Amino acid sequence: MFFRPSRSQLNTFGIAAIGAGLFWLLGLPLPFLFGPMSACLATALLGAKLSGFGQVSAAARTILGVTIGCSITPDVVNDLPRMAGSVALIPIYIAVIGVIGVPFFRYFCKFDAPTAYYAAMPGGLQDMILFGEEAGGNARILSLIHATRVLVIIVAAPILMTQVYDTPLTNPIGLPARDLPLHEMGLMVLAAWVGWKGGERIGLFGSSILGPLIVSAVLSLSGLIHSRPPAEAILAAQFFLGATIGAKYVGVTMSEMRRVVVAGMAFMLVLTALAAGFAQAVTHLGLAEPVNALLAFAPGGQAELTIVTILAGGDLSYVITHHITRIVLVIIGAPIAARLLWKRPNDP
Image 1 (cartoon, rainbow, N blue to C red):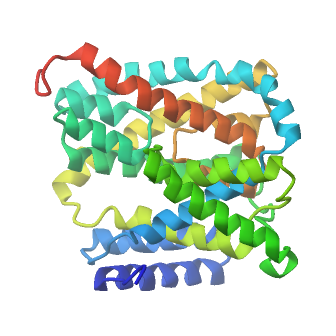
Image 2 (image 1 turned 90 degrees about the vertical axis):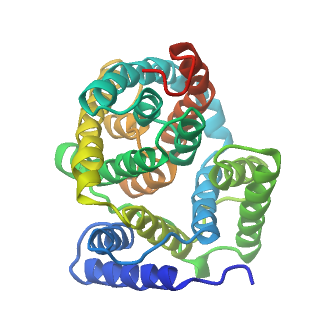
C-alpha cells in the first residue's frame, strides 16, 4: 500500500478533524489550517501520541507547488524585472537576521555554536536541521526552533493582514473540482507526481514543492493549464499542513518549553518586526504593494505562506520568488559561512 496509517497518525487525523470542524462551526479564521494546527498543538502539549503523515504530508505540499506553478504565466515572466529591486534586498535581510539571531541563541540562550547558527538561519525546516546536525548541533533544539518559527509566522501573518493592513483573508482559494476541465486536473496530478519524484531523484531541495512548481510552471507557460488546483485539494493541503505543524510538539517537556520554545517565539517576534520593517522600506521605495511586501519578507515556510497569500489575494508569483531566493541563498550560503565561523563542530 502507498500509505498505511499508524495508530498515532489516526489519532492525529481524528484530532485535526475535530479542530477543523470546531473552527468551521464557530466561524473562526482559516478553519482548515488553524483548526487542525490548534487542536494537534494543544493535545501534543498535553501528552497525546501524535505523529506527522509522512508521504501524505509531502503529497499535500505538492498541491501548493502546483498552485504556485500555475500562477506563473507569460505576464508574470515579463514582470520579473520589476521584482529585481526588492529581491536584491534578500541577502541583506538574511545577514541582518544572522547578526541578530546567532548572538541571541549563542549567548542569551546558551546554545552551542552550530545549534545557535542554524537556529537563526531562515531556511527550510528540514534543511536547517540536517545541516545543523551534520555540523554537530542539537537536532531536537533545531527542530523545535524551526517548528516554532513556522508556527509564529503562520499565526502572526494573518493577524497583521487583517488588523494592520486591513486585508480580509476571504479571497477564493480556487474553483471547485466540478468547474475545472478534467484534462487540466489530470495534468496537475501528473505535474505534482513527476515534479515531486523527479525532484527527489535529482536531489532537488524542497522537491515536494519546487519540483511540482517547475513542472506546472512549464505547463502553464505552454498554455496547457489555465487555473489553480481545485479548492478541495487546497483545503486538504491546509488540513495536513496544519496538523503536521501541531504534531511537531509531541514530547515537549516543560524545560524545553521554557528554554527552547519560548526563546524561539521571542526571536520570531523580533523577526516579524524586522520583516515588517523591510516590507515598509520596499513599499516606500515603490517596489511592491504593502501586503505583497510583508508576505514576501515573512520568514516562514513556503507552503504556509502560499496559503495566506492566496487568501489575502496577494501576488503569489512575487511572494514566492522572494521566498525561493531566500531559501536558495541560505541553503547554499549557510554551510559555507558556518565553515568560516568555526573549525570544529563543538568549538565555542
